[in-house]
Length: 363
Figure 1 (cartoon, rainbow, N blue to C red):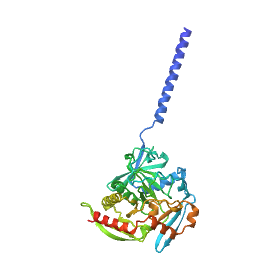
Figure 2 (cartoon, rainbow, N blue to C red; figure 1 turned 180 degrees about the horizontal axis):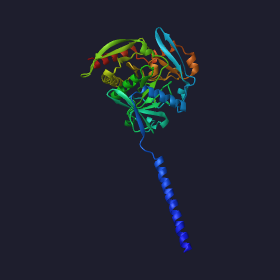
Figure 3 (spheres, helix red, strand yellow; figure 1 turned 90 degrees about the vertical axis):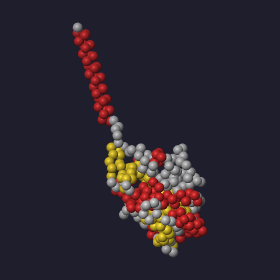
Figure 4 (cartoon, rainbow, N blue to C red; figure 1 turned 30 degrees about the vertical axis):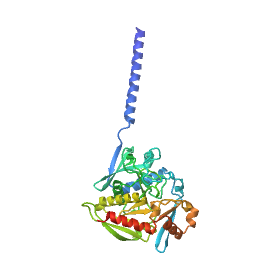
């Protein structure tokens, strides 16, 4: 009988230990379970972006730093140019040169779906012309319009905005992405932060659609020059849109105002212009500011001195020079002459394009 009591006591102890282990496991699972992301929405983008960018830069998430970043400005017969040196950009991936402006997306090459969690900041949604930012922890990678840091920053507050991320779009600016870019640029009023776009053969190194955000060190020269109205365009029952050409910069751009009341019409016209560029095989850059959009048809990238690979900053007046020795030795006059020859469209080609744009867009 003593043996039976001992056996019952031992079995009860084992049962209690097993029950305790099961309970502990359940409690641990409940405490550590991964549930839905905790998200909150913010009505504006500017302050959130500045705050999160600074935070990530402080955490060392970037693959190059802005240590040693410097700039200077000069003018040649009234044409201004900003020279910048950012040695970290030499580490940036250059991508494989592509011959077609509409090269299809290639799933076998780098895409922004491969960005790390540390590079992703928040997502965007456009409702009735207004942007809303959503911050999730953990980051919701299923959302389409994502805002990321640029791991190889152009300068302070340099970021990437791959819109329609999971649609695997190639690097072609469509009307819906132009609409989002117009709204995004207005969010940064008062900061000198700008939104830019490079087509293939005009500075884009990744053929997965994306916009870029960056803050030039001064007002971009292309924004300072005078403009001449060339036509008025109207689409359907939308507002009449004045289209201008810039005067006095080393490349010539088409320009329109960026106002909330006309953003749909302006996005449609930008898209029509770009369609014409594709028909004519013209590389192009686009600059979105809080008050305007500037569309820059240009010559395609070619081998240039000093390792220059001009994209939207260069086209708009901020020339990014990789090597410090070149930065110190090069004069504004040399750069203005170089870009007039190798970036701007020849006069006859510009006039033919201008006639084509007028015929296609005039109300």
